[in-house]
Image (cartoon, rainbow, N blue to C red):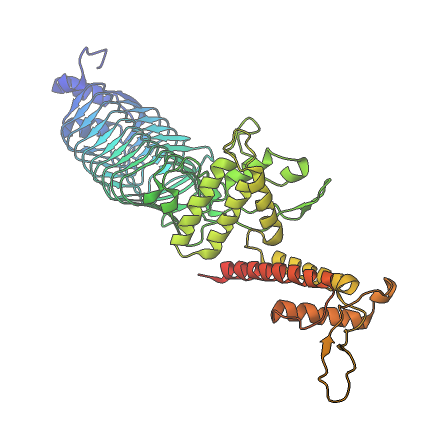
Length: 556
């Protein structure tokens, strides 16, 4: 509406319109709220503000709210130095902003692009909003540059392909690309997108098969709905999949090579591996994780974790290294550990036991899941590793499961009983739950040495007893009855005399023959017989545990 003429541009007569257009210069403000633009009227207005130096339209504040463009709106190369307002505008035949420059805020909220919207190579220097916009045909943002902190596509509807190849945020590390509650009805590919800040796809709906390629600092897919097969090719980003709804298989793969240009802060990072932060309340039966970093991933609360597919090299966290000194020194065995165990141990137990474990980012007020919940998570993930024929990985998660069972000290009757915890402590101490061959071999060595020492002290007699013949002398021609007997082995030497190389060698021979060949073939004292029996039992048990541990590490 032009206040001095009392009418809008579309209703001015030819003379009045010509007079108005003659007053316009490059960089002039355009107020065309609610105007219906024919192709000729739009061309006349843009020609009036065309910069002779560049040959492109140059607008200051541009108000096109609720305007209707009856033909294809051609804003090719246009420069907007003020606010560009197109809220609720209608482009029945589409619009082209190829190479346009928006130096201030740009708003396209609730705009309808009937014939598609082309923003190829457009530059947005400040915030831009396409909130609730509808693209009935293709939306093209290839090579577009977003230098502001926010690009808002929330609740937008994409009924055709959405092209963002080479589009990127370049300026702010705190920038956010919002697609919250947007709908992609027939889009087959989204991206490649590059954002030095956060890409938000919260509660987005993908109605069909789609491939999303993203390079970002963070990527949020909270409540995102995938109604078709989907592949998320992610570089650098920390991905949150909490409450995502999967109706078909969804693959999250760490993309080593992003196809489009990258913001400087991402391009300078040596590591491109993407990480997953949470799968809370996700049906993991339809989820595939490939080559992603899971060191901070929260698995508690996910469904069907036993059917989760882990492919490639997925990274899990590890216990702290080194020895923690306290009243009782603590050293943690090397294995794959869940982030939830890190968080739980960081808040539980003695100070030395907490040292080195990573607390939750929310601080001490956060209550991570306890051992009872972690037992279930470890057990289900172990099953996933076993189904993938990854026995070493499954062994680590079995170790974690047993650790949580051993630590479950609930007093409501639902935790591990005292007897069960005692047995688990013994199993852990002897062989690391049948997974640490070195521990079993150490105990086997200790048991052998103790058996040798015990035999030297109490098991070996002074000397091997010699058979004795006893009987009664008979007259000539009478039968003689003789009894051949071997005296019981005797040990009556002093304690100091029992330590000698000869007795040591003999004790070693007895132990080896007993453990390997199952029979020592030696005369032993009564105590020696019992010592040998115990040695056979413990030796066989520890050797079996060691073999079991080795098998668990080399089996595929």
